[in-house]
Length: 204
Image 1: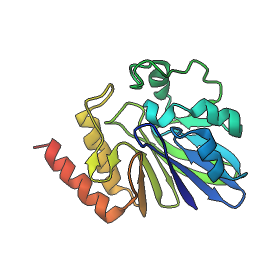
Image 2: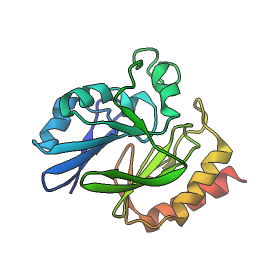
Image 3: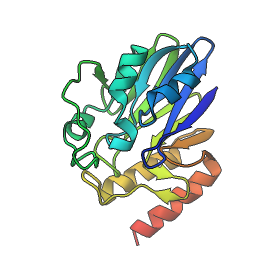
Image 4: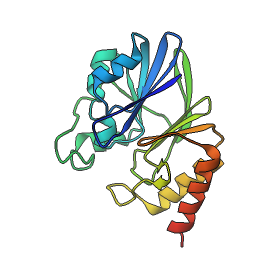
């Protein structure tokens, strides 16, 4: 079961993915009390971050404290979380304690939690810290692709070339449902068309 909590930070999404008495959380922008209602007493086995912008990470240490779980992300995320300019919080949010963080190894692999195996691949384009996570065909992509829109490439660490690579990865990857960092879910057929159109646009 996947449940979505929409945050008060640019309406970013937080996802709670659960099976039985266990769950993991994707991104950390929503207030911890709202997420706790959805967790509903389940054991949180991990907090996964799709990238380092504040609307997706600002409350991550609140989650760590409340749920006692580790944080899994690209090692490149640390640069963003240490600096309120890079994470676009206008200096209002930064982290200096990364003791709860475990960085994903290699460009791609499988994150093995006690009750979940989650495929990941490090991307780019929207930020240097972009990661996609795939759990049984549910694909979490952060802000690389947001509904009919491509993520911004004019922010710190953004890159036209890396975005092109990421969109190609998304087109080739087999999944059922795409869960983006903002807005509603979409199916692969729809998002393949969106990715194709954005590739044509930025390569024109």
